[in-house]
Image 1 (tube, chains in turn blue, purple):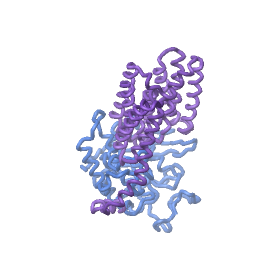
Image 2: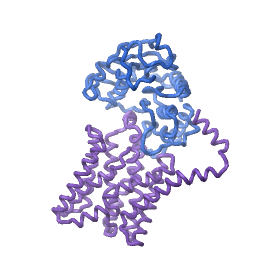
Image 3: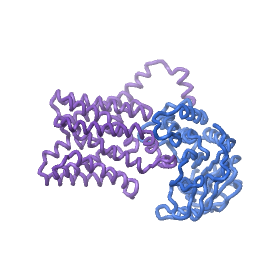
Image 4: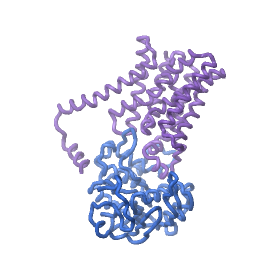
Length: 262
Length: 280
């Protein structure tokens, strides 16, 4: 991929006073956040702290009850350059009632780049899809139904879909959740490349794990508010042990629920 | 007969095309729901003396839009919203038709009467079919992404609400196209069964849609010819034939194909590497 030309003035995301209310509950209680170009930001926090909601609000997928948010300087409703954004949602599986090949799923990542009237994919489209597949190591299974792959591989398909669009900014929601070690390592490699090219990456994560050296800044949410914004927090004591229960040092201890991994 | 065959081909192509998106969205009963709503439109058409087909078209489109809005906006789940419109549509249709004094008229719309289709009807259906196929060709990629992941579709700048509405309206148009031949109660079948059958053979979305359209035409034309040959009602014959195709393909995939594979040589080097890559 060609290196991104730095857009010096405009931050990819900027939220001021953001409040979000879902089902009557205040999930985000006044968020001020600016993401600088080229930053690798980790959004962390315990379950229910609002981290997924925050990134979805940054993308305009969730309406704000108060405050405002901008994508490259425009409110989401008026933003037009969606090809600059690559989103990998928090999904365990590639969805849908009809099978789709891995290639078809990844190719749908090119939609933001295609002009309205072009009916067939261009050579550039096909090449970008092939590169994305090779980057995540799924070129060999490109013509298999995506639903037949393992969980970690399906996550890689979703990442390839975002890569295929060649965006400047990536937003990934829990990319390592429930994913095998091989896929986590592949993700770390992919991120290293993106960082080298100067792209902006926003990651929602439970814990830093193998991605820790790549993170330039971490924001920790608790109860819908930012309680830490700066260098990635070092895991201490119990938290430094891999595979521990995901309680962040800055979050108060929740009672474990069925959603916490062992 | 020529008109009936032409109609069968048009329906066989169009219904599974939009049906693939509906099955993808897990809204397989949408066609049925719209069909029930269309009954009210027909009742209105019969009552007011205007064309029942246009009445059905108008009400179906509105009903489809209503289902979509209820699904997206209210706390009512998609399936409950469908059920509400099912019953409302059916009740409305029977009521209005009884006022128009046409119990027998409703019958032909419920179960289809392909033999009573005129050339004028056929032209209307041809135009509608061309419209539906145009939607699939022009918007197919966006609709695919929408059906796969609505949030991602919005984060790619797609007008998700408008596209969802487009699917619902296109389904409504297809229902109206198909109701003459198949009848409203079975319309959903021709949207969904060929897709289910195609899935037994195919791996990808585009292949599934093309195979479903092929199976749709095959079932519609053979069903029609068989019905004429053996003096059976055409609508149910077509649907049962589509189901027979589905069953045959399921049996092939579950029993026939593995048995065949066991008799051939073990997998060559290419398949082994691909398998290793999948496991890796």
